[in-house]
Length: 222
Length: 260
Picture 1 (cartoon, chains in turn orange, blue):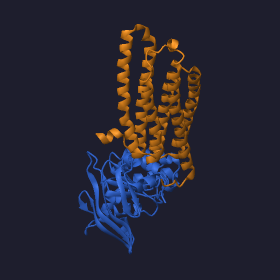
Picture 2 (tube, rainbow over the protein chains, first blue to last red; picture 1 turned 180 degrees about the vertical axis):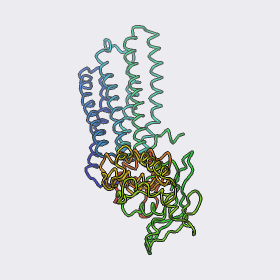
Picture 3 (cartoon, chains in turn yellow, purple; picture 1 turned 180 degrees about the horizontal axis):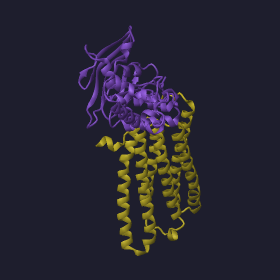
Picture 4 (cartoon, rainbow over the protein chains, first blue to last red; picture 1 turned 90 degrees about the horizontal axis):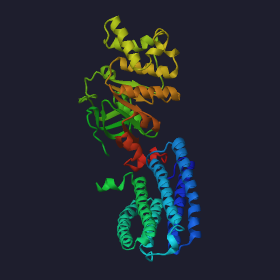
């Protein structure tokens, strides 16, 4: 991309993009480790996920402050404007993704008596797709790649399908054996959180597309 | 080049394939554009891109430059303004102009405004002339500030007031189009804001074309923006579209400060 005549503006944008990339990396790791700790019943690891979420909150505030400063001082136009608005919104979404991962981790010590009524295979598989969506959407962000962004959006259907299947599965466990209700309810919330992460990754993908092209993917489909 | 058609607005002026030459040098290269009534149209572009030259073709101000030659057709309400027999004085009453530096006549505030209507025979009686002067000064947002000192020289006003006086002078002859060539470049931010507010009010009545170096000003006051570069009209569209999602790379590079 052609450099701005005012070089400090380029440096600001690079810094802003760096912050988003850092947030994305943290969010992705948080999802991964929350699920690992869930599967292994590792409460220490879960506690680390919870405490590290604070870093994401701080970064979001840093992005906010920086974006507001750039809007006020640089009065950006066109792709610069879209870039900054997208960063502002993406930071908010990544912070939410971090919250969902934290929420999953918080359930680890609360899962009753480790007695699993199923070997937890569907949830990690679902989590892997959600984490990959977050990973790939940040790759798309870094490369300003609208095609990869659209590909991420399409993948959300898989996460939704997993959720439906897990939901049916767990309800049938609960019907068959009321002793599983407590754990199944917790795990259902985990599935729900993963489903929301997929939706949020989709939102980020839409912002990446908007930033790169000036249009939302839905505008093109219409 | 995309030339959007905005609804409910007839083009007041149309330029077809207009080229302007200064001697052998081509300053404007086959530009076509519609100027709509009840709209503010902003011309933006780097220095030397031809935007002021093009603005001046719209009321034949370039006629005063001996080496300048205009090709193509410019119509006002469907009538070619460069046809022979066109009354240029009458044209400039219909297509008024406000310049970069406020240039009041060295006469009283009253006379500055009354001059145009008088020579155009628009106000035969003293009462009508008084009414015209008051109406014009009110529309220019200057009446309250000067009503008690209409006999003072126009040059005694502040820069921002002088510029509003020049706008009052332009609208006193009841023009249909007002051309403004960087009308705020010599003014402070408060005076600039007043002129911008005035432009927004005047737009309900006239077609306004403004040349500005301030992208923020173009974004604030105009509904349509035309980007000129090296004598070409690169892109013309709704202002909100030009400043958020320009279609042309050259437009994008210019408005985001990546030019050159």
